[in-house]
Length: 421
Ligand code: PLP
Image (cartoon, rainbow, N blue to C red):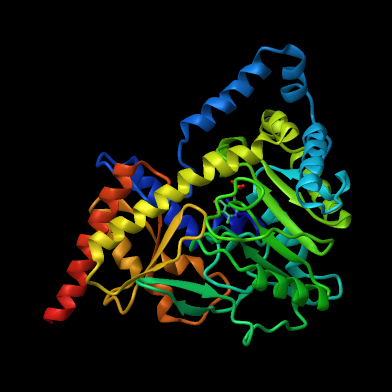
């Protein structure tokens, strides 16, 4: 069968597509697998019980059910939810947003597909423009979103060596260049894969750079404030007309209901609504409808801060302990876990690439993600790209403990073999 160039691109091989297939096959195999590779949120019984309550209320009220499931929303999304969100955001942060500043999408991944294609790629005047990722490593899910080609450029970070075995990436403003062909800047905060939270100072500087150059600053807050608030360090959220802020209900515990939220200036929201209409008629309203009462009462903030955040913070602390137990005498460095669901481990001067380590661990029944996939926009072959892994600590304590124990065994054996050679 022959496809168009668009068909060939999306149907063709992609690094992440191959990796996800490989992970899928490993999970489906007979041998039990310890899944430290994915980005699925963990199960939090208290939160699940609260969300089930809301679901039961919808199921028990025919009119509400008809509103949620029996009607198409407007292309910008569920209006009662949007009203609740506007009120919550303005009360909490005083950003002065209105309904016209919000659009709902089918998950934030869907929003990124729209937004990156709205700004990156070919323009009517024949020029081609790019999205700047000021701090790589960055989210693996950005890599393949463009309908034609690849339009990212990324900046290598500076590395701060912190106490003990920790480090932290920082934006290297000395090398950050805004060339004519940059159409927008994008960061995830907290960052997937590293758990980094860009400092308020870094965010202020990026905001200033974006405004001075008259390009938008896209902030991916899939793990951020105000919900799900999986942030263990300080990080003040800010927004202005030049910001395109992307939120999601996924890491609040509802990835299956595919709800993304974009807060931006009206031309961006109008464009996203138009894309929603063309590609989906209207976005999925089930997630928005389910959580509307929690947004109207403000309970979403309480649940995020007092239930979701501590759940992951405890898991992050135990994962760090397990890594230290397994590898204390070895040159492993841990990116300071400041948020999200991941530990980012750097095996300095590891004699093999972490893609090879991924294969060895898969043979031992542990799935992680090697670092090379997290550098969209950095083509240069930088050794650091092959020395790190991302592991997810959202799964059960036993899975994380056992997985890290096996990672420790393999990594020790690899370093020891070099020492003996
Ligand atoms: N952004 C980041 C940084 C993520 O980690 C993810 C998912 O893992 C997404 C966006 C997309 O999430 P969703 O489409 O479920 O909202």
